[in-house]
Image (cartoon, rainbow, N blue to C red; front, top):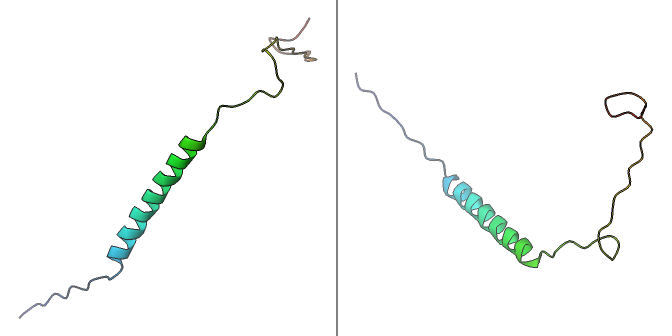
Length: 66
């Protein structure tokens, strides 16, 4: 008795790899563009930083006013 094995090649293996590599390359280019064009954040109001004000009306819990 003789057994034959048939190997069937899938023709999309090269395209899949190429698509993944292209996606990675485009992602790297996009990341580089964002890094180059990024600016320092600006304050909402001009001037120096001041003290923050916090008012609470909580009446229960460990930080409640008594």
